[in-house]
Length: 285
Ligand SMILES: [Zn+2]
Image (cartoon, rainbow, N blue to C red; front, side, top):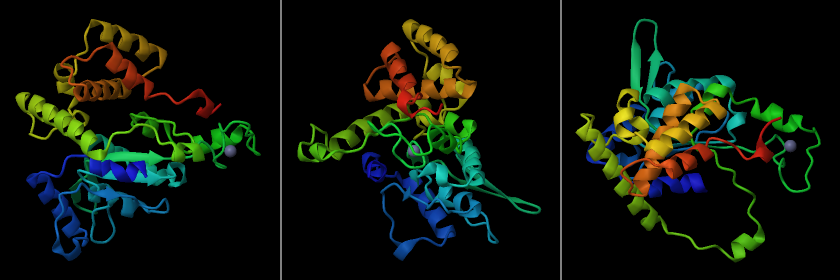
């Protein structure tokens, strides 16, 4: 449900983005009734999806789900149930924002810059970590299931959030919450800030922190001194790869943008780093 709501928190598609999205839909033969919507795409392929369905291919080199989710959200429910080859094929588009389909003597490239949202249970039976529960298969229930996700794929997932089961009481007494309109205003303000920042650095309008090329990151996301110290410490302790290090910086830049802070400080980095680790109860042995 949270994933499905995400597009409603994102700013509507700009004219250029709208054109991209409708061109892909048209090539894929999915332009329904010729109507265009400024709503960002939301795609949720089933875990039985083939590689061609996911990243594009087939006889006519049709765009896949990653391209149909361009400028929007790609939601993969029950992530470990996807075949390892399909999950591996996501790495390139996540990294480059494009999907390349190789043919005998040419290549077809489709745009594929999406936000990936994935959901999974901690183990195959789905109960690990629940108070008082012991998996029938023991600790292997967790470790075997989580081993289905490769390190390189996990390295590209920036925010890992533990969502505990909802109890009846949570539904009876909902906590204080913000509505989508309020949150979207904050997201729009942060996106505008990013667009202006990257335009000033010579990048196209609409560039987000996520799409900031590595060589501009130092200018765009330089933390203050306390932040640098924390990051250096964490990089060693958490054994961050170079990629993960860059990704933490981008998340911290976004957290600072949402808070309207010019400089990335220690709290922004601490929050960004906290999203990279899973709670201990869900970690595979
Ligand atoms: Zn289990």
